[in-house]
Image (cartoon, rainbow, N blue to C red; front, top):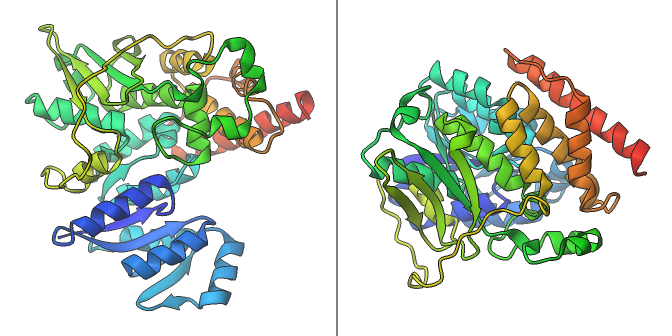
Length: 397
């Protein structure tokens, strides 16, 4: 039996992961869960799933929660902060860590999981974008394993393994020798049909209404700007080490085909499934077995369409492709500036179209350098965020 800890159990990935674990009681058990501020949902999860530990990483939320419920609920101990996360990561009986904390803040827990040679099921694309080379280097020096659970990258991995190739995400040349092209798909988000002249009227409530997936607000905005797809392009480059010219994305409105892999003989193999995150999560949790029984409706094979991403509508995707070609710390700059911009947009302080303009400005005014250690990278991330905040305050507030 595999024992699991979930970092970010109250987000959409965490909720789906708990559903999978509960449906495979003979294969999987739950050790620890964590949240930032959504303690109301955390309380429900504690009562339903009875983990050994529940971690709250926000100080005030932890204080308020323990005042109301004490520091133990049935058999679940309530613990706090980074030390709490490290405890549910380092536990020797825990084999797999689901890294579902949104944003760059997930970097510390993932590095900790690598240190303890865990299998890391990663739903967080921001840290691979910002610190991919360092994370891959750390993985190569450990016995830890990284399995993507984003639907697109999980689909790429499933195609690759089903095609007779091996699991060698850390290898610098293996996939370049065996794969010609990777393609991931995008639903198009809520604004694919909206005229560009109407983008200036987009509100926060408009941007978080994704047509296919139920996600958190930040990821929903990234999907609406297509930054999410740009980050996924960079993530695919990090995981499979192909040149960015051999990695692309297409609009596929039906969200049934999640990825395609083209081989040198001209064969193109796709991965299809209904848009249900329990499918990639279950595959990663039971890897290399495939034992989850899905209760989706019968798959509908009609209406498959593909189209190019309109770059005039979605400049964030174009910026991400530029960054993927530029490398050095430019992906870190892109991600940090985007996280700050989305935060201000969600607070109604800037417009939807300002997001790409701010990210572009921060890229243009920042120095591109290489980072050989995690500390300098984290310092640089902090500097970029301060720079983005100062620019927003000068220009927009």
